[in-house]
Length: 435
Image 1 (cartoon, one colour):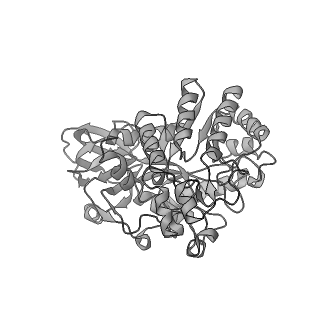
Image 2 (spheres, helix red, strand yellow):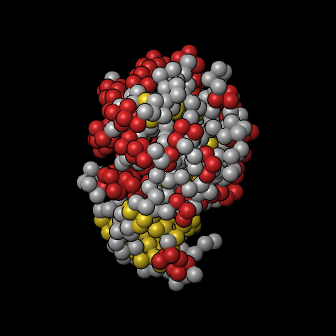
Image 3 (spheres, rainbow, N blue to C red):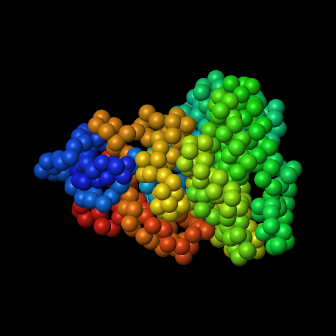
C-alpha cells in the first residue's frame, strides 16, 4: 500500500484553489484544507495548476523496429515529463501493428514500464499498404482492446477500402483515424505550396491535398454512419470542412498539433530539416484559423504527433530528411505560449482539449480524462505556468533530439505527473517531498 499524498493549495483547472487527498490511487477528498495523515507525502502546490493527466491521441514510439529513434520506455519517460498519463501509439512500426500479436506486445510493454498507459493504435490495412483490411476485429478483441485504427504516415487513399474500414469499426464502436493526404497531389512535395516554397525552389504541398480527403471521408462517415477522426489538421480550408460536417451532424472529430498552432512555413527559410513535418507547416492565416477552431470547439483536441527520428534521418539536407518532430515534452509550453497566455484558452479548456475529449474519443474515459473530484482515479498533472525554460533537444527524455523549438523559451511546464497516484515525473523542487 502506497503512502497517502496530499496536494495542498492547487489551482484546480486554473480556477478554484483546493487541496486533494490521494489514497491507493484514488482522489478521496477535495477540500479547502486537509489534515494530512501522519504518513502522508505533502506537496505544496501553491501557484501550480492541477489538471487531469493529459492524453495524447497521436504518438510515435517507434518500437518495435526503430528503437534507434525511440523506445516505449524513452517515449513513456518523455510523455510523463510532459504531463501525459496516457498515449496512443501509432501503428507504423516494424513489424506494422496490424495483428493482435503486435498490439498486445506494445500494450504489455507499456504496462511493464508503467510510466504512462500506452494504448496501441491498430493499422487499417495490412502493412500500411492500403490494399487489404487488417485484422481489426482480432485487435479489438485482444487484451489491448484497440478501438482506434490508422495508417498514419500514409493516407487510406482508396475510397472503397476507407468505406469498408468505417463499416468494420462501426461493429465495435471504433473509429478510423485518417492521415488526410492525397498522394497524387503531394508526390515529391517538400513543404507548403505558396510564396515561400516558390522563393526557396522547394516542391509545394497544396492545401487541397489535405482538404479533399477530409471532405471525402466526412461524406463516407455520414454514408456509413460511423466515426472518423482526422489527424493533424493544418489548413483553414480543412477547418471549414470540419465545421460544415459537424453542422450537418456527421460523426467526425479532428485534432491540431502544437507545432501547427505556433510555427509557419516561414521557418523553412532556414532549410533546417527540424522544421520538415507532414503535413507541412502552413501560413500565418492557416495558424490563425486553427487557433480560432481550437478555441470555438470545431477542432476537438490537441495531439502532439510526437515523431522522433535518429540523427542521421534529420542531420542531412532538407530533401533527404525524414518528416516529423518531437512534441511530448514541449506541448504544454507551446500551448500556453500560443493560446493560454494570449487569452484564447483557459486552463479548463486545456483540460478539455488535452485530456477529457481525447480520452473520450479513444474510449479510455473510464479511467483517463476524469474530473478532479472525489472517487476519481488520481491521474493528475501539476503545471507551473511561470516555470519559463529554454528548450534543449539534448536534454529531453526522448532518445531522439529533433525538436523545432531548440533555443526557444517556453513559459510553463509540467512539474509533476501522477498515474493512479504514483509519481511518474517530479521536478527537482518536488522530489524532496517523497524522500
